[in-house]
Image (cartoon, rainbow, N blue to C red):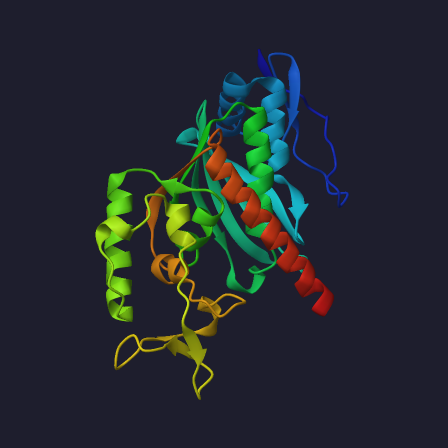
Length: 284
């Protein structure tokens, strides 16, 4: 039995009135959405997959404040009940980004996430994914898929433990890696390219210096060395070759939530990112 419960509402953390609760099989679920048939279908889909408690976990995931930005569920896709859309707003009340997800029984497809440039760099993406993964584990979701791209995504998501979804994705990045190494004057063959995306992301090369223009470049690699901006070097001055290879690329990625190595890699990056953000706050 699914019905509308008139007059039953809750408030968010800002005291704003949220949409009506929906009663699915006798258990009320609260939503920020207006009462429409597509929304009921979407809620029913979540309940059928994860039960009432699990469905509420999903709704709560898209009703919270993270790193100064507020996530708000906006709608279920009328044509795809398993697809949700959400908005992101800044502390100034302005739009800060948008996103969408497709929920399957044991998999979530991160179909879209766009954080506007003036709201980036505050740790939202990393923390939001971290919290999402915690919810997925509770629901026995076993994998997350996405198109790892959109500027920095091709480099950052491997650091979070994502790997190539298929051989086609890997072959595209191997070709990119060979081209970048050739441009840098490195002698490398395909067999030397690591198997996993997160291993490629971690590739570094020593032997760089600052020239008179403040740009770091190779030493004794070729007569006309490739110039590389400073943000492609680590604290020791080593070239972040993996970043140079993966930045700006787009490829299909998957993370299996029971893969120990992927989880270890993601945990290391998450802790590193938290430390860097804390240091930035102290200097601010």
